[in-house]
Image (cartoon, rainbow, N blue to C red; front, side):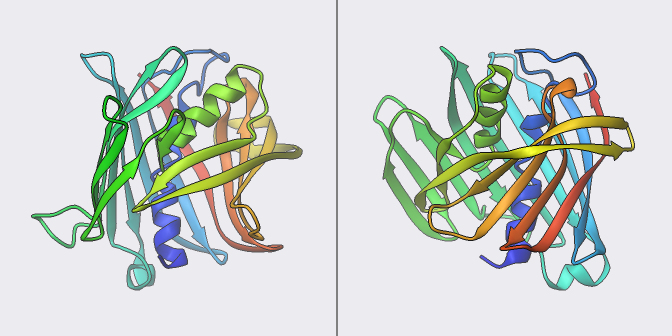
Amino acid sequence: MSSARRLAALALSLAPLLAGALEAPSSELKPFTASFGITWHGMSAGTAQLQLQRLEDGRWSYQSVSTARGLFRLAMPAELRSRSVFAIREGRILPDRFTADDGASSTSKDQDLRFDWNTQRVTGVAEKRRVDLPLKPGVLDTMSVQIALMHELLAGNTPRYFVIVDKGRIKDYNYTAVGEEKLVTPIGEYRTLVFRSTRPGSDTGTYFWCAPELGYLPLKVERREGSKVQWSMALQTASTH
């Protein structure tokens, strides 16, 4: 996957961290709507619109749309949609279904993965390839991993390690607390805790600036290769329902 497509995909995975935004810290998720501005090598590249909802059956639905702007439509999908449906049982995040598509086809999804916790398998399609992988407790999709991160932070724990299904592969990610920083944003100035997510042995990482006062809302996100910033995202608006 190109760096541009990874940027668009990550834009879709940030929303769950916003669950406690604009209110005092809470141990419970809250429905929300939020938007981010995306910058690529210092230039405005697009936006991401995010929404978290509670379903009538008690599960959660996270939907997101990222839109490329101007010339960046040549490097990334003009519009990328993603949705994760998941449950929370006994403090554990359990994905049920993950879908993502870039609008290129009206009849198929780029990804359509179903998590069956009874048979302990995740099955479906990813980029026209069939997926059939074993499940074990703790395996997440590329969006619900952010829910797991939020839960760890709200519980007062330092996140260390998560396992996700990314397309047709199971991947490990290490999470590290790297410091604190105050940030000025459109919704105010806040102290943030900075976390880095990396794959073992890689010098490319994603950094999250999370505000404890806002339920660990990510005020800023950066993708870095070594010390070089590839792209960044900044919160523009956020509201709970």
